[in-house]
Image (tube, rainbow, N blue to C red; front, side, top):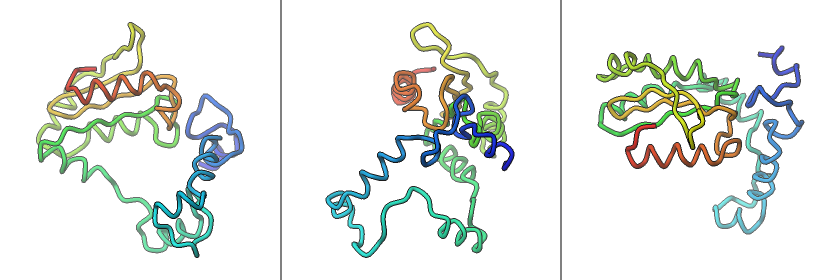
Amino acid sequence: MEPFLSSGINPYDKSKRCDGSEACYENMNFVSHYLDKPEVRKILGVDPSFGNFSWRSIEIGQAFDASLDEVFPTSYYVSALLERGVRVLLYVGANDWICNWVGNEQMSRDLEWTGQTAFAGEPLREWKVDGKVAGITRATQGFTFATVDGAGHMVPMDQPKVALELVQRWLSGEAL
C-alpha cells in the first residue's frame, strides 16, 4: 500500500492527486471545523475536556490494532440483513482505490445467504441516468450492487445527481 500512498495519487479517488488535506478531500477540513464549533459540540453532548475533533486518530487506531479489532468484516451483518428480508444497497465509486469496486463486487458475490447463487448468477449490466452510462449493477432478491462512474470514495460529492438517482430508484424499488 505504501508505494501507492507515496505516489501522490488520492487513494480515495485514483483519478485525482491528493491535495494534502485530510483524507485527500478538502471537504473533510470543513467537516472538522464544523464539528469543532462549541455550539455543535454542545448539541452533540461532547465532553468539553475532549480535544479537537479529528476524523481519525493514530492513538485510537493503534488501540484497535492492539486489541485485534482493527477491521471486522461487515459481510456477516449484510448476510444477516438479507436473510431477514431487509433490502441492501451496496454502492461504490469506480475510482475508489481504497475500497475498490472489484473487491466489493467479489465480496457481494461471495456473501453467504440463501440468495447467493441467484445473485452471483446475475450478470453485471450497465445502468444509466439520463441515457448515459452511470456504472454497472447486479441485483436480485433484495440485494443490489452498483458502481458509480466518475466517482471515488465520496460518491455523493463526486457525482451528486447520479448518487441521488441511485438512492431514489433503490428506495422506490425501481431497477437501476
